[in-house]
Image (cartoon, rainbow, N blue to C red):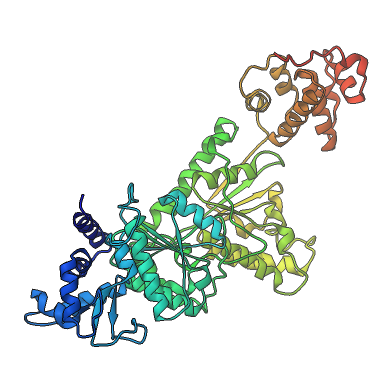
Length: 566
């Protein structure tokens, strides 16, 4: 391929990827020919009274383009669009233009030469990302998390640094964007140093200038506050990247008119993408890895929770469409003894709904100062609602207790109950409350829950399944009498889990094969820890070995089979 054909190919690609109009492309081609054809360059140099190399006078260009027969306005727009992209320099238009004598003229910039192949580049991008016409504004507290997200989405590449300078720096940045689009197929701009009002103004102008491109352009910011108005004007997409909520969303700072217009656009999906997520030291949205299939429950309870999941999905995703996009929250109350799986069920619900999880820790919100408890509770509700998280109230009876209860202690807690009632009514997210003292809950809260489920002590079949899953997930453990353990011990899943971990730890530490005596001895410790009788752990068949494991009789323990190294 000769050089002129190479330039022609890159010129066509650059015009497409940057969204240049036909007339702008024609002007760019004329300037490119100045460098490709020596005789043309020499002719133009001689025609220029100031002998400026590589310069095409405005008068000469206007005479060569047919579109100027009736008006120069289309040509002027084409030239300005090329200057906005940083592809050409206009001599004599502004103080920031190249210092050169003589009348107004045009010449290619460094970035223009790179884009159309007149300077060494990297060839045409291969395997470019999916076409994207809008700017994408990603925001999160951690720059590393944003870069990682971009890498997983469009691949690795050089990242441009935002600017806070004047017009010359803006021209240079626009040119860099064009060069990256034409060589990488995308551009990523680090806007963290430019997130103040002055820098945000420069970034807004950059996005306006480069809005015609047909390739991914991504701007990374710590928060969207300073750029929302510009995003609205050019139709940019805003997206919050979890799990790093950070932005302190202040209703005084954020203009409600802009928020309403952004939310009304088809591009806007969630409020957290457009407004950010409030910063909080006491609550952070976190993703859970607990799956719905991880719940080991009786068929009746499992079916009831499946119905609750369907109810939640309907309220969150279907009901708003029939109610003029008005959001509808979902509230689930789970009761049961400690260790029956209430918290695990809340985590599985969050995973099934594809939402992060926020926990309200009672110790972090109680305060002796008047009004402070309500303020902290409201902060956690704001974080959960803005991030779309599942809000979990563990041990809900402590904060939703009956207001007439004489055992209430602390004015902050009693006033917090009244405040919680109002927040329940206004909350538009998913809330799961767990309790093992259902009788202590204030009656006013019951009607505010959409579903109520009791997680009882698992039955014998369910307990046997738990023991098998936790002790021998591959189903190859033959030294454990699962039926005996499941029949003799009516205990919760939490106790079963603790006993399984201890039994496996003891067996591995003693280099012995895991067997029934290890499980029974571990169960005795677990029951003792929870102030329960341990008599049933000393079965007639395994009593001697269980006592040896608990008392440390090494002579008897030597009889236990060791782990087969093979």
